[in-house]
Image 1 (cartoon, rainbow, N blue to C red):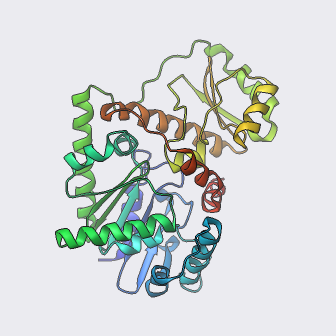
Image 2 (cartoon, rainbow, N blue to C red; image 1 turned 135 degrees about the vertical axis):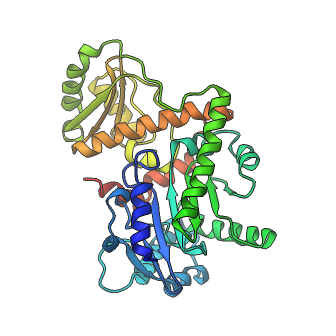
Length: 355
């Protein structure tokens, strides 16, 4: 079996909008001495065997013994340097920040995605209890800042699970984040995903909750072009491109790292005035990416793809919030978690890869 050919096929299969948005998610394949992992910020659907970053597993493993600074900025800088040093010679791409987490899992293939169907559970108040009931063999991981902190916590939890059950978990479900599935064959990956998604679909049916986003016709659809012109006037290059759609219930707060990276933590829902937008920027520290108006919901960006991606993530967040009603309602990220993502260099880098 050609590992790179198979992981490329899996990346394309699980790189559709049902599983990930933008540069979200990551995949890997491994053998004893080498881990091949998705480059940071790239789209799963666009990967080829040549684009995976080859990492020396022995060098990558030094992270687990390193003396890590307590300061988060110093910690992430050290981890970034150690990960770069583990990349095998002759490669320019930057490995996914979650490469060490992939390395922890013993099976040959790992596919990590953020399906709305799964995040309806992970981003809900009752997610942990629901996961234990539906997926007793899976490992539930409470929300932890992405990066090295998450890696080390998961490493401990995986080790504890293996001691109790005699083997590592094949499925890891991370609160307000997504799902990792590990398997020694592509068929094991597909089977595990199928089991999880089928079980969740059944739960949504029982709760009477649609798995498609509820959209209502905007009250003033004829005003859409006027809104576009106003946004361009107010934000300049930040709104060089504006895309819109009919109305839906936009999530009022931060749901997951991907939603923060591509659509920001909060939408703008006030009057479209220069003073209102300036006040938002002053309070939040960034220009809004999503605008909720009577003419519909609009995403803005300095490129068309960024504007489209902002709107796509807003729609995804709204669907996650809709689905979470089956499990006690949505649970937003706390301020400390939100601020870490908003200020994390890795996520800034990932967002920049979207042209």
